[in-house]
Image (spheres, one colour):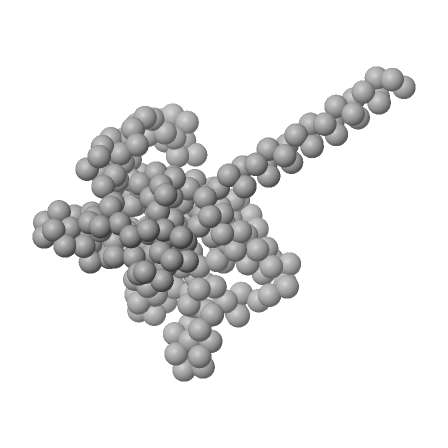
Length: 251
């Protein structure tokens, strides 16, 4: 009858609106965030659907340097386990804090942000063989959370409405929460360590010596169409951060 047809039309309109909104959200992401999120989703989904095997993408220093399977240096950062709630949480944090960094202290400097991920990936890859970690995507995500927190020290946050804290404590709150759920803290601690090394070399060391070690290579800047920037460019903490109040999955 007429009411049924109207209900069906309304339902189709709602689904179409949701699809447009999701597409807009995806297209509005900055280029590095969108690329990393896409590769992570496709790799994890491909493994879940058995189109590719996790054994072909995991980090193995013997296969990389003895068998020259160099793709493993990159693909291990794109796999986030099975398609469950853990995967959803990882995608949430990846898209949220990756985007906050690229649109915040790295606004207009996607090349520098990409280089930060390269530096972080290199640090994590150097340590991984000694602590037997095969997939480093979660650690790289935690590195981004750490850097964002340090560069936004005045941002107030709330954990599930239970208690408030400032952004630099966010990695520690997540670490404790993850540990309480039974997860190993090693992956998170590794990401925090890599984040601290980057933060020190990029934000602290240049103010101490007036020299910047982590200059983005010309080739990377050229690939992103970004002009050179002289001097230290981190500065989120020195400029007071982004301000405001944020939640984590947090309200």
